[in-house]
Image (cartoon, rainbow, N blue to C red; front, side):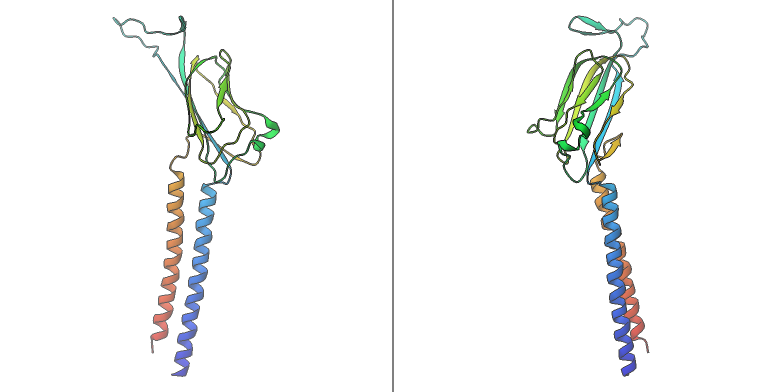
Length: 214
C-alpha cells in the first residue's frame, strides 16, 4: 500500500513537472511566433500605379484626355504610395542613416499631388515632392508605431518605381501592407499556447490514471 502511494505521488509530480515544462515550451513558441511576425522595428511601404485613360478607343466615342492647368497630360497615371511603421516600437528620426531621407524614385515627372492622408494629423511626417521632378521623399522624422501615410499623385508616364530606404537596424517590408497580421499573429500565439497546455494536462491525467491502477 505504501509503495503504491509513493508510486502515485511520484507519477503525480512527474505529471506536474511535464505539464510545467510543456507550458513553458508552448509559451516560448508563442512568443517566438509573435516576435517573428511582429518585429520590434519595421517600416512597410507599397507603391501602386494605374493609367487614367485606356489606350484602346472605341469607334464612335470621342477621345478622352486629361488636362492639368490647361495643358494636356499625354500619358496620365495615378501613383499611390503607402508607408507605415508596422513594428512594435516607434521609429525615431535617428534611425535614418546619416539623416538621409527615404526616396521613392518613379522615373517619370510628378505633376501634382491628388491627396495625402496621414493616420494622425498631430505629426509633422509628410511625403514631399517638387513638381516636374520624379522623386517623392520622406525627410527624417519620428514614425510612431501604427502611424501610416497614404498619398496619391498624378504623373506623366508609366512609373518604374524604385525605393531607396536607409534605416539603421530596421526590418524593411516591401509590398502589401500587413493590415491584419497583428490579429493573425495573436491567434497563432494563443493556439500554440493552448496546444502546449493541452498536451501538458493530457500527460498529467495519464500519470494520475496510471497511478490509480492496481
